[in-house]
Length: 360
Image (cartoon, rainbow, N blue to C red; front, side, top):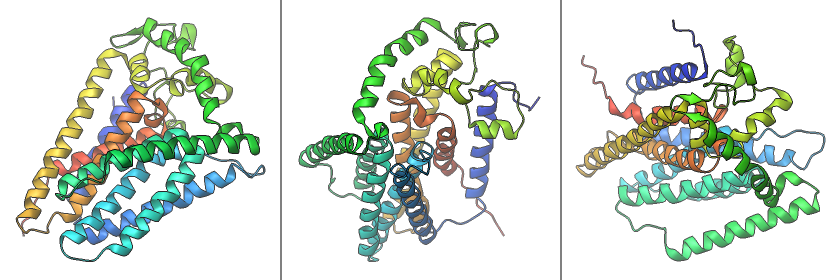
């Protein structure tokens, strides 16, 4: 009975295991601020290196790139915001952190450039993470927000300039993958037909049987448009429908051309979409509620939850960013390998709900 019979069951089972595992881990080990600072620095630096190498491979014809920004982009937001929050918390307890902050700015720039070269959607995710993280930290630490109209305008100018530079690079190096205009033209050609397919065939718990690529073999729901990584499914030797090779273009009508709300609605139905949106809101409200508790404890002079507070700020920021980009702009940000990241971020927020106190 525990063996998943379709994609939705597998997603739910894996999500439950990840949430329970992270919850148990949180209550087995202590989480000091020093450990959170070190691990977030290590994670951010590692992802900066991975994104940098992947972007370099774009310009080397004898090496292939892997597009790590999709599954690991939200993790980069999590790592950097957690690092910034840890540095701010050090300042709160009168420990100098200027060198850490300087390093975080360097890593911010490296990840922005490398990730932006790979995918323009990552730039949206990255700068949205900076904005949301800055707002949350300004509220948590009672500081004037760094988000001002001038900085927002400056950010927009930088974004437009970055898109222009990417388009120029795509022409100079004859690399269409770098072109923002190519992405826009593909959306113009494919988004509306894909949207029509979803709207006309979605039901409350799935889609009209036969409307997906499998034709007569269409299950009417959980047909693989929204799924966990294929490698994971193959590892468990589950007989679930998958899109391989050139068939991936059939999956792209939803995975690449539409926001996640349409992908989830088509594959799992409007009912599942409503439940999923409810879970997203629950995670966000829970995160902000616990964050207020941590801030109140810190203001009373306790340093017990400083590490947890930094971790929660990073996880909550990354979860919100991935939710916004994945659900309302780009389905691939929460699909496939990125779904595992999404589950982990959700678990890193909800794990703060239970705090088991062991008694000797």
